[in-house]
Length: 213
Image (cartoon, rainbow, N blue to C red; front, side):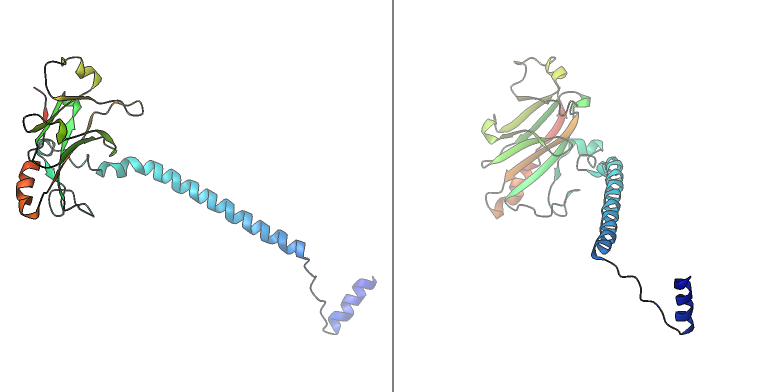
């Protein structure tokens, strides 16, 4: 009764009581709650972004280098890796090399990858669809002025005797338990001097990815 009467007197006189004082531990608890909420919100948002990215990978991956070499002509004719040439535009091209690529497809049978070699350095490498290197050779293994690779799956290797071809044999291994069925052959030829760039390009253009036999 006394407290109620005191409140009425204070209200009549226009007086207001001071707000209750907040102790430091109360302020800390309120701040901790907001911080925990922000952490939980960030974790949920990160999980959603991760899930969306995982489901988007198959659609975004259809525009990789190998996928853009789908036509029959592109699978047989070499394409240059130079600015303004072909479908590849490297951001930092190496002026000391001419690079050509062609696509091999083991689903069509054993593949014969070959190219002429110049007087200087040249290198031929095979790449899986994810860009990783499967195999690589240099002009040191060339015979009669030509680099020649016979690319096979383990099953196809059983049908091609070792003494039937003098080409370098490469049996494509499985990656992560999955057989590699197609990929890119990349041929790099060094340009000895600027005046021989066109001649070097003609040599690099001899790259071929054909069916064996």
